Structures are given as C-alpha cells and as structure tokens.
Amino acid sequence: QVQLVESGGGLVQAGGSLRLSCAASGRTFTSYVMGWFRQAPGKEREFVAAISWSSGSTYYADSVKGRFTISRDNTKNTVYLQMNSLKPEDTAVYYCAFRFGMVVTTTLPVEYSYWGHGTQVTVSS
Image (cartoon, rainbow, N blue to C red):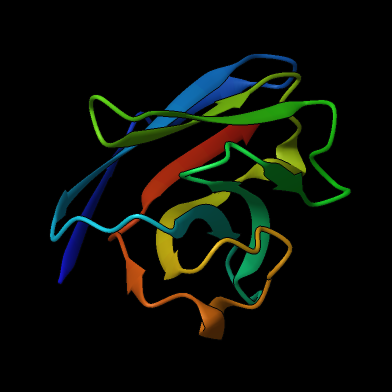
C-alpha cells in the first residue's frame, strides 16, 4: 500500500508560479513512476508529467512542456511539480499518482495504482 499526500496548491495570477509537492509513504519499491495529473471542472482527468524514481527520466504533456518541471527527492520520498508561466487554463485539481514499473510515457490514469486526494490550483487572469 502507498499513501500520497499533495500540498502547495493555491490561487495565483496568470504568469505566476507555484510548486506542488507530493509526499509518498508506505511500502518501498525499487521500480516505479510518480506522475501528476489534473482535472478541471467538467473535463476528464489528464496527464501532466511523470518521473521514473530510479532513473530520473521525465515526460511531459505538450500543454505544459517548457513551463512545468517534475523532480524528486529520494531522501524525502517526495515528488515536486514546479509550475511557471501559469495560465488560466491550468486551473484544475492536481493529483499525484503512483504506478509500478519504469515507463514514464504511460499517460492513462487507469495505469496508475495509487492516488492522492488532490490539491486545487487556480490561476486568475
């Protein structure tokens, strides 16, 4: 079992920045991927970014590439999402997720086994 707790959401003006954190606890594994997803009202949950915990390989959705950066701190079992140049269309609940394996290009929510409760990000225009 893996528990994920997100933090760092909030309200920010367009062009601003936020950093989300996701602390993982529970059983330890050697090969897994941590991902960030988001869901806006009335829309399906969509992939944002992922990182392989062992290799550090990353993958991003085209909509956030160049603006968002995913990283991890192995000593703290924490994954981060640095979000810069935020746009109103980035407004959503952001979820941290965990999946077994090493492939970071898997973008379907159903492929992830564990989820956090989400943190709200609101970008005002």
